[in-house]
Image (cartoon, rainbow, N blue to C red):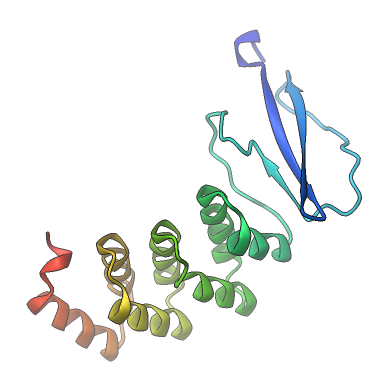
Length: 171
């Protein structure tokens, strides 16, 4: 790696509710590090998002669900949701369905799109129910787009009614 691409990378290692910061120096294309830790709850790579990078999270299911439910950073939570959606098992879908009612509209928006890609019965019911209650216009729009990927009579009726009279989606 040319010297211009050498950089420091920070990790946050969470163990028993306490986060420990570990700073690493990246100087080669591939690096391996050993970080002593007793059964960490999870590890955050670049917790402050100081490094411009395209990342995906590959972690145990329990870590991803915990990050989706509890992490303070919405970006981490969205990436955890994306990783769970790729697995698309019953437990992962259940976690995404629960996140569809999260207090943060950014999480709800992202999860709506992911549920639309999954297009199962749980996804459809969650989106239809959510659309009835959701007030945030960006989340509503994401839900409508997600439902638009599904072919089901109930979805078609809902979207038809929206097309005829819900101006909030077209503002």
